[in-house]
Amino acid sequence: MMLLSQIRRPEGGVGVVARDGSEAALVKDAASVRDLALEALASGRSLAETVAAHGLGEAVDLVAVAGEGRLLAPIHHPDPAHLHLTGTGLTHLGSASTRSAMHAKASADDATDSMKMFRMGLEDGKPASLPGVQPEWFYKGNGVHVVAPGAALVSPAFALDGGEEPEIVGIYVIGPDGTPARVGWAVANEFSDHVTERINYLYLAHSKLRPASFGPEILVGEPPADIRGASRIKRGGQVIWEKPFLSGEANMSHSFANLEHHHFKYGIFRQPGDVHVHMFGTATLSFADGIKPEPGDVFEIEVPAFGLALRNPLAVDADQGVATVRQL
View 1: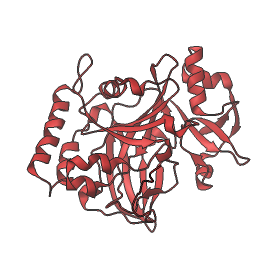
View 2 (view 1 turned 180 degrees about the vertical axis):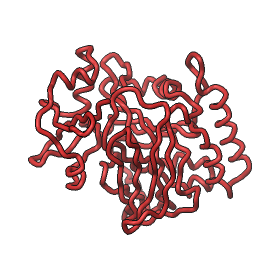
View 3 (view 1 turned 90 degrees about the vertical axis):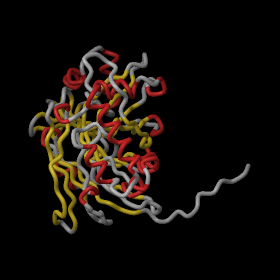
View 4 (view 1 turned 90 degrees about the horizontal axis):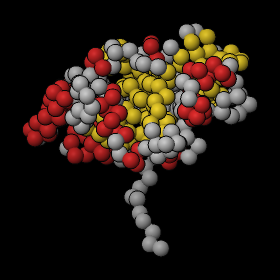
């Protein structure tokens, strides 16, 4: 399968890189992955056929590019407000037990609601015909919150925690007629504040308004049904926590198609030209094992089928004080 990524050219500007196996090269005359996707829609060709029509040019060493800090998010929109970061939770087998562990000190009602939502997914998350049951859904931000692979995930000063969530994301461009088109799939770190969420599950919306990173590469085509990788945290170059990361429909209580339907059924998410990065959930959290990440720790999420590992250090923002509003 083809992998696509975006890099910062040494002379400036964006370069689109296509990779098949170990061979990676710049796509000729490609300004961005979004532009290639829109061109594919306009021409009626697949994304892979569109890349082939452009042809490949200069070879690229993506490992060296990563070491130079030139990896970019694998898709962007020229107006960040038109890139939407969203996601769904309680979608994976085992995610209910992880949520329960997170909320061990919360009320019994919280655990009951989480388990009820999870069981609804088990019963009707993979329907023979759409639609199935609605998943838990959350808004994470827009393109302003997108962090490039290798760059720091910055936790606000008021946050109580900054922890990783290894996930698979679907990446979409909305066509001129309002039809969503899937560009591909990528690994993501859906960075969240789990301590705030644990206080009360109604704080979930607050806990999710954080930056996120995804990529470095987009897998074009159908993803494996059984996606296997690893999530780890390194401190001072040493691994302090590591667990297997499982995703894909074989490990989920919802089908991707059902989750996509319940996102794109809203007209606001079918605006021509917009980009969507939708996160499909996880059952693997260091927080559930009592780990507290510290500034300088590096989150590493690796799934071989999706290309290069996603690595991001943790940082904490300076205190911005009280948000005040000026009367006009």
